[in-house]
Amino acid sequence: MGVFLPLPRAHADGCAAVDVVVARGTGEPGWLGSAVGDPLYGMLQDRTRVSTSAYSVAYPADYSFDIGRGSADLVSHVSAQAAACPDQQFILVGYSQGAAVVHAALGTGAVSGHVQLPGYLADRVSSVLLFGDPMRLIGWTVPGGWLGRTGNWCTAGDPVCGGGMNAPAHVSYGGSFVAAANFAAGRVY
Image (cartoon, rainbow, N blue to C red; front, top):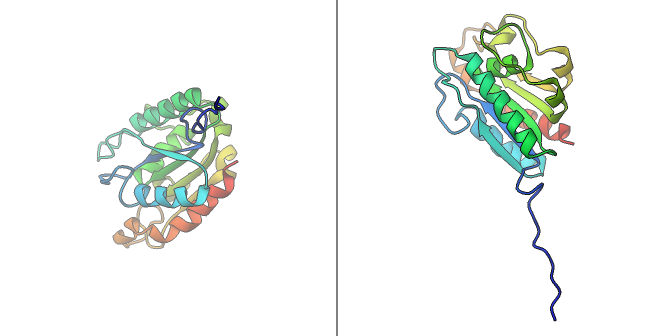
């Protein structure tokens, strides 16, 4: 007679330990965004050393600047995932217009039609990673409770986040990915 051993199951019945939620920049191609999201996700997978999944925020990311629609989708996704995966953590990533989407979801300023992440989910977000953040240019930061877990990168000369005059700097964030991935990995609990 053999011994029955149950097959190993994935973390929390198929739930990844960390869900990386990415809001891409204006007109950015790629699944999570070719300039930031796609390459950064690869680094996060290497550095977090836990199971990961990723989600691309569904919003136009065009010149309509429908930040409210983006924040609504981000909050809807995180809320649904949190309910389905009670132990899952989240890393929120925003690039350019996507950074404004993340800001809106966190409650920065008054963006028309924005949807804010419910307070009871705040502890589930281990880190926030922002790149080329246009809110930085106008002096806005994430609300106080988010400051310690937020990394905000602006490449020298980037006109979108730093008021510079070097437009190519806005698509030159590859040099920030190691620091961002290490920051996020260090916050995964």
